[in-house]
Amino acid sequence: MPAAVVEAGLADKSTVVILSDYNKGSLADVQTMIQLAKKAGAQVLVDPKGADFEKYRGATLLTPNLSEFEAVVGHCKSDQELVERAVKLIKQFDLQALLVTRSENGMVLVREGQAPFYLPTQAKEVYDVTGAGDTVISVLASSLAAGSSIEHACTLANAAAGVVVGKIGTSTVSTIELANAVYSQQEIGFGVLSEEQLKIAVKLAQHRGEKVVMTNGCFDLLHVGHILLFSSSKQLGDILIVAIDDDDSVKTLKGPGRPVLHSKERVRILSALDAVDYVVVFSSQELIKLIEIMRPDVLTKGSNYTSREVFGRERVEQLGGRVVLIPVSEDISSTRIINDIKSNI
Image (tube, rainbow, N blue to C red):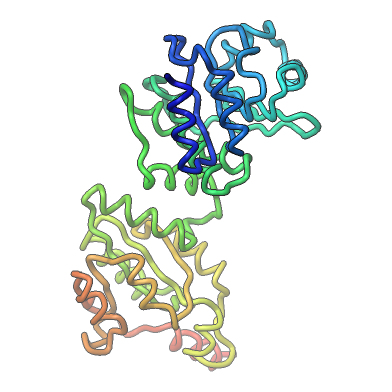
């Protein structure tokens, strides 16, 4: 019996139960299942079917799509009307929340006494909506079971749905795809990456079979030598990530009065270059950690260094990468430019 299956599952101390109603008869005794789960202290998420929501009384959360929702409450002419009718359903059937999925209009989470939580769609292109509802409720459940807030769980579910509808047929969403969908929505501007975004960008590149090239430095006052370094580095692979020393590191490395340009300004300049794909700001003390995150196929430096002088070379090689010295033919440096300016004042 399905109810017995739910009871057996709860014996393993499950904290979240999914009841997905396909109207095939397996959830004929759904109310018993809900009560068993609630008695065990589990949250109950239901993907409903049909216009009879009475059988789902007492569930934690229902996830109807808009057509299923309107089949129960009637056509909603506005967001306000949708929210008002959702609150009435929550009261009527002793629910905690409703998550109404609305295709190209995203989702809305409704709870009594709280402002509605709107989530715009993240799908760039919709090829097939098959399985989108299953994706939403499974990601919701996984996130809630991991201790996430309902808002965070809905955000992840929305991102996951945006991934699967962009594929043909019934599809899964990998953790990498989900993370990329989430972080790609967090704009921090000018091509700069946080540590988490860097991990995702590198993993995606590696999954695509692309070579990751890394170069690092202060780049405090951009000059032609830097441009040649970047363009030559990009030719060695598919993705060029430029790691720049943060302001404290530049001051330590270069001395008083440096940096001339703060990290935000340097990021804006570097990310505007065609050869540069991503920029990450780091402390010089954490270069090895950065290398371990990126696992670059190639680490480049100017030929004014020797291979043995390249900090991090051993770790790059241990991880399967190599160090390439880019020929430097221009007798130019940021320090020389700064000194020339000072001498002419």
